[in-house]
Length: 67
Figure 1 (cartoon, rainbow, N blue to C red):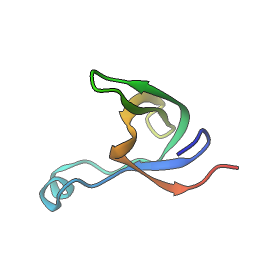
Figure 2: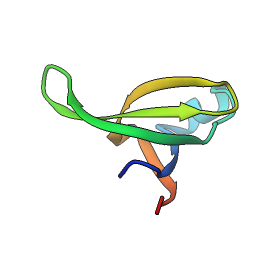
Figure 3: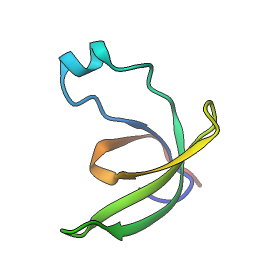
Figure 4: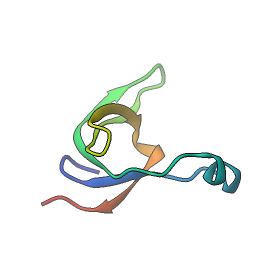
């Protein structure tokens, strides 16, 4: 994944899919190493809510690649 990619959070399990709220699409703003056992994290902007969150790369999937 790279800056500019359009992403959404992966569905972990069928149960979670039923109980979770609608999945928003987000735009990757940056990537960085973080955490106690260092892993790739993304800073993602969600335009529908106007908020920015940091999330592990393994928890999101690319919907459309940026240029």
